[in-house]
Length: 126
Length: 208
Ligand SMILES: Nc1ncnc2c1ncn2[C@@H]1O[C@H](COP(=O)(O)OP(=O)(O)OP(=O)(O)O)[C@@H](O)[C@H]1O
Ligand SMILES: [Mg+2]
Image (tube, rainbow over all chains, first blue to last red; front, side, top):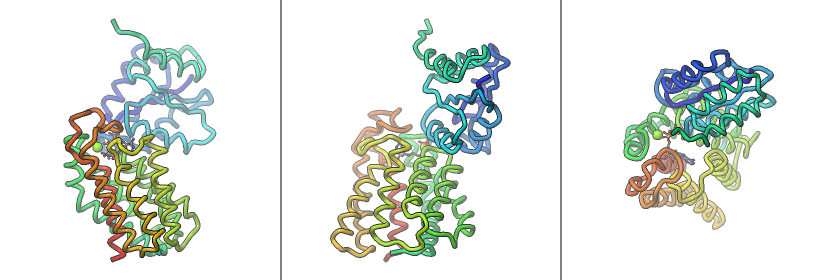
């Protein structure tokens, strides 16, 4: 299964998104990388790196970020993981994560998981 | 212009000046950001300071690269990957050198601007650190071309960076966290442009 990492400035937010997605897709390897080492707000290179490694397999990993430095720091982590199959997805965090988790759990490829998350942006809520 | 010993001295002064101005930079980040720029920069440069003894005898490229890596891993906000990439690219531009001249310094500054743009995808006029960096580098280039001394062209660079900071007060942020406050960002100077000016002043301080 494709691994999923949720990166946010907020530890609670990242963990909450994982929690919510797991209600539907409990089997998918999914982990949060939120906040700084000391629990404060921000993005941590080390936490993101460790999170990606913890759910990594040959199927690859997708990363969903909130904004600003979450994206820039994740980009740097991925640049330094040469040869590994890791990609960022430009999608809404909550909807994208839920869609990606469901897709991953059904055994889809990284490309399919990525597309499912991107498509989630086009779904209207009501 | 500089050998590796002096680069270490410069970085120490940067850490000191950032530390002294941490509250000021954080306060600038309050109205248009999330009130943390000084805290972020200070956390980053304290780590840089801690690791400096380990690279003191390395070449200038390696010292700058280590500085960049420390900033990336400890700053925790956008300024981390941005300044981090800037220092790492600057280091790559003078890899292996134990001594640099004014032309190398221009390469360093060009690489730093290129690094910030690569990472943050911003242009001049978006109310970011680039609004101080780009004019400063232009002024430094002019000074070097005119045959000025390091003290003189660095002073020109600082002057241009300060004007850049003033300019950020007049424009709307379209990149970074400040872009969320939109028009309300007018009247406030950009924290990152201000911290860049302090970093350049740290370099200039050692040439007076
Ligand atoms: N895309 C960008 N390009 C260039 N500079 C940027 C960009 N985004 C932000 N900045 C600079 O970073 C400064 C803010 O740095 P700070 O350390 O406060 O990060 P932050 O905005 O809080 O980060 P985060 O993205 O985590 O919210 C801004 O004042 C601006 O100069
Ligand atoms: Mg900030």
